[in-house]
Image (cartoon, rainbow, N blue to C red; front, side, top):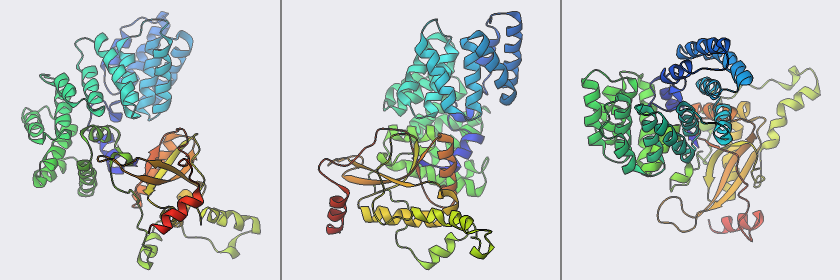
Length: 442
C-alpha cells in the first residue's frame, strides 16, 4: 500500500479520526472502567489503578510491565485489555490485536465492553474493517451511553461500503468526536458541503480540536475551495506538511467512497483501489535523475580503504540484487513492500533496478519478488493483468513501515502487503511466455 508519510505525521499530531491510531490509550473512560472493576486481590486492584493512572497520563512504558504482571497472574480481561491498549499506544498493533483476539475467541467468560472496543480499534488500525465492525458492534451493545463504540462502528461501516448506515449511526449525536467523524464520512461520500457546515459549527462553538480543523480543510479541498482549505490547515501544519497532506487528500478523489474511508483510517492507498498502472518510478533514466539520487545514497568507500578483500565483497554484495529477468514469486510468509504494478516484465525489471541502485543503503538486504494478478475486463476498478513488483519478505509490519517511510522520503511510493497466499502464475503461462508476449505487444 502507499503509506503516506505526512498522513502518519498528521495522525500522530492531529488525528483525522477519533478512533484511529493516535487515539490509542489516551481516552480515560476505559481506564476508569477498569479501575472500578475488582481484580482478584486488593493488591492487584492497587496495581491496576496505578497502571490505569500511568496509561491515562500517556506513560505507557511504565504501565506495560504492571499490566503484563496483572495479565499473567490474574488473567483478568481488563488487565489484558489495558496491556493491549498501552501496546497500541506504543505502536505494537499486531501484538495488541493478538491479545484481544485471543480474549474474544476464548469465550470462557463474559467480556467487558472496553475489550470489544479495543478489539475494534486494533482491527481498524490494521485495516481489518469487517473485524473492526464486529468489535465495535459488540462494544456498543455493552457500553450503553458511550458514544465512542458507535462512532467506531460508523467508521467501520463507511469503510466497508455501508455509507448511509454509517451516516444514520452518527446522525443526531451531540458528541464532538462523533460529529467530526460524521463530517468526515460525509466528505468522503461526496457531500462536502454538508461536512463543511457541520465542521464550521464545531469551530464556531469552540469545541474544535486540531483533528476537526484538518477534517474541515479536507472538506474545503474536496469542495474546490483550496484557499479556505489552506487557511485552515496552516493553523496546525507548516507549509510543507500542508502540501503533502493535500497531495494525499487529492489522491482520494479517484477512489470509491469505501476506499476513501479505508485510506483515511489507515493513511494508505491500496493500488487495487485505482485503475492506473501504479509504476512508481520514472523509467526513463537520465543523468539529472542519477545526480539527484546521489543526495540520498551513502558515499561508498574506496576499495583501497577496505581492510580485507572479504570486507570489500560484503560492501558490493547487494549488487547481486540487480536483475535481468523476472524475480521469483513472492513467498506467502512475511510482510512485503509493493513498489509498483506493471503491465510488462521488462518494465518491472527496469523499475526494480532503478529503485535498487538509488536506495542501496535501504534495500541492501531485501531481495526483489514479483506477484501476478489478472482482474479481467472490468469497467470499474483495476482491469487486466499486472505484474506486481515486491521487495521482501520482512518479518514485521513495523520494519515494513520503516522502510516504506524512508523510500517515500526519497520520492518513491510504496505499498505494504500483508502475508497472504502466493498469487502464482496465470494458468498455462510461464515467465518466458509472459515476457515474450509483453515484448511482442509493445
